[in-house]
Image 1: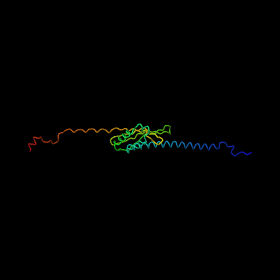
Image 2 (image 1 turned 180 degrees about the vertical axis):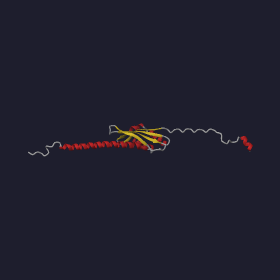
Image 3 (image 1 turned 60 degrees about the vertical axis):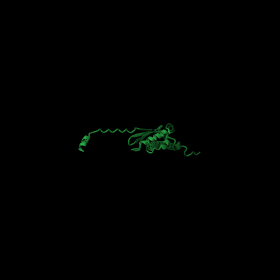
Image 4 (image 1 turned 45 degrees about the vertical axis):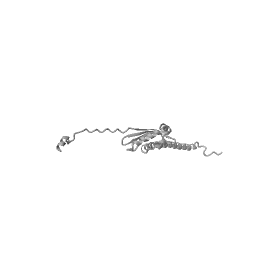
Length: 180
């Protein structure tokens, strides 16, 4: 009776499977970290674009497209119109919009959401947006948006000049008659 050639070697096929499983796990890990990095970059870019589109372009359509459904119900069209009216009344920006903030993840990889502040610098005053954003199924959306500004200082009234004697006093009416 002949024996098979490889019957004495145990577990030769298992090493190949372990290598394949290891490569699959490495691929999943790489995918998770790259997805997290992309979500972080995308959230920061969205917050910066939101500040620019509202404060510079006054794009009400962009605002409406990206408001979350809950925020659309909470902020009626009159609120959005008032927001745009206020932004237009501030005038053009003196400096570009500066957006700072951070993205957080609920379980290290999933459900990205962030809070940002977009600083708006006008010639006579400053303002800022407080933004809360999250990633939905169709892309980034605005969960909360607040515009906060300090009105420009009221100009101080100029002091009224005190009546002072002129260096060469004009002659009194009696002296004028004598000369003439």
